[in-house]
Length: 275
Image 1 (cartoon, rainbow, N blue to C red):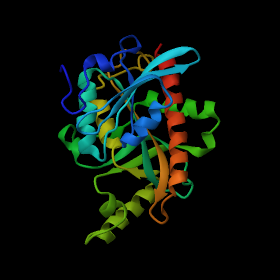
Image 2: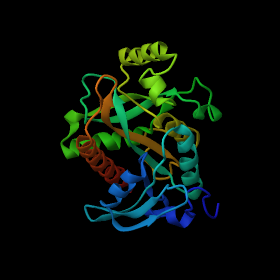
Image 3: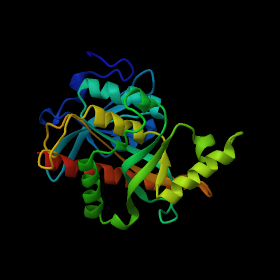
């Protein structure tokens, strides 16, 4: 692939970090891409026809310079399929969703963060890659890096780890609108009783892509090696719930800033482990 059709990027744009390629943060919105870009040095923002603007830059951690990219996925798994696959074909190997979600548990307060260890596949896009019985599981090293970063930042009490829910329908499935509302509400209540932490719209398919293109099997000693071909993870800000809706905009943006803090700190941790 010389130039990605939708992203209008080239393999050279995604190269870096001694052959691993850029660590790529994947928010849903282009606005969050530009907020991530403000944290980086030597930033080059690449616009395109789809408004999937990518920011290329450098993160400096303890004197180390880490090549970073941020690119929006848009909303929903079909859009993730295009963006993540184009990035993969360009050479990106380290993808981290940096998104928002609705809390499903009372213990997760609005504004808290959620590290997704796996996701309920309540979406259809990943069916094109794997049978329904195959779980959507995050790369365990991304999960460890995010947990370490939360500890290092001193925010562990407000960061939760566990299974999240990925859906195709925002209003129908999560908020019970439409003629099948009661069944959808019962489904969401069932997920809550099962201990699912939060609901969002992209992680499950990203995790499936990470598994099917990740190679392996990997032993424990091999898992942190830099030649693992694909790592996909996700960290989410809980900005709403079914009963209370979405928090005010200023609180939402503050939560997203904490989300970006954690994501960039985890990149620093992971890049240190991978050498």
